[in-house]
Length: 117
Image (tube, rainbow, N blue to C red):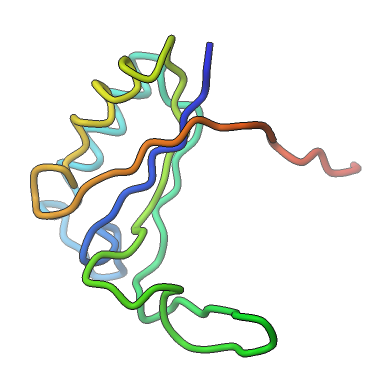
């Protein structure tokens, strides 16, 4: 089955340090549903935008790579039979219904890096 990266765009991370259960509940429910369905391979919430650091050439700056209203707040990898199925799953993401959105991209290759014991 094909794998797709789902990049979550929002004003900031829903799982920031002082987020309430009420704020994270829709995202946690969505993740649990994807886990139960077997579609989710991996998921990561990122820290808040104020903890981002960007590198362009030899220049290091504070903040996200692109100065925009929305930032990449997290991402997950899902398995789906095709792009249409991946889109149907990704459209259920709470960010799509609270002012943000998601970007779905087929994964060209890669995987977990094995580390020596």
